[in-house]
Length: 435
Ligand code: GDP
Ligand code: MG
Image (cartoon, rainbow, N blue to C red; front, side, top):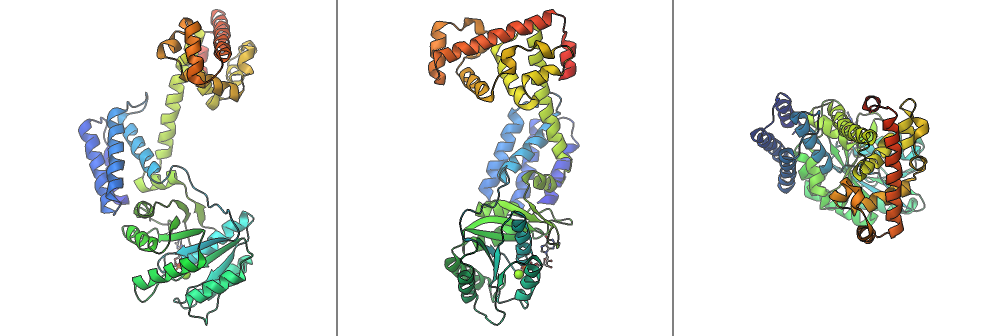
């Protein structure tokens, strides 16, 4: 997957003009790449349709080339696919039982050590149970890992009954806050392995089943995830071995197959080479575009700047409308309170209307809600808002008529103050320097 997409992105990066044909071609490439990686076909079609629609219908923001725009869209939609927000492991009951699953060599035992360290840093002290009766020295490996961290471990190298080990471990640690179960990744055959996991699932009744996927295995990830999800309800995925050149593209199919989010990644053999999953970083890596983050940031800045310049200019020229006021409120979130914004302009700080500097977030939000009930015409030309319109707006936004009147009063005062500033000779130049 990584290879194909990287080529696609390179192709796109070499183009200066983007037309319909090119967009369709790029989307096809992405489709092909995803399908080749065993990603669920419905998911591929949905993703590519969204990308194509957006790329063909959305105007690139000013200052962003069409090429950058298409890359941004692809990136955003892929981030959405993986869940745009990193999800945390939520320890919400006692004991919280975590079942680790994955093929032998995928990195379960190592990852358990890493997770223990992570949980210790958060103030938890987990206990670990070894049920791997297949790998020689499985218990020894865990013992070494846990001893260093002074973590309690239950296991018995002489006992070859995984289910019995699980039951005994469960009993021993029933008063612990977190119990982590390590399992075997190998059996006589795969069906037996899945059956053992299924039995363990019934005995342990895990609060979270974590599937460990080797980040270097590519297309097999989907099949592995599917097999293990027959045994238990996979709650999250950890991708190991995302150090070196591996891009972890197979993870997309594991996510698609289980619907479970990726919560952590392993980035090396050492115990602290472990990170909370960051979807944006992961996609950047997958697309082979290290600088995509800065590209996105550039796009966002331009949008803000555009709006800010227009609003500031309107404010100064006295053409201040309700629409400008709404923009102003939105800018306050990103630029800080009005007072602060105005303070950046020499000689202007003291002249900020009193109301503007005293606006609370609640008030701003209630004003915004009222403005959503206004028509475009009213927003552009607030003078027309009289009695019957006030009644309608109040009803539409579920507030008192007095609240609408208060908003109009605030608007009129601000407008007056702005006009005053403009007349006193503060040209647009100063404002343009500000934004
Ligand atoms: P298990 O069979 O699933 O328990 O896998 P292990 O935890 O025993 O790991 C198998 C091998 O993968 C070991 O040599 C580990 O050191 C290695 N390994 C595990 N996680 C990572 C990782 O994030 N990066 C690298 N480079 N190696 C890892
Ligand atoms: Mg192991």
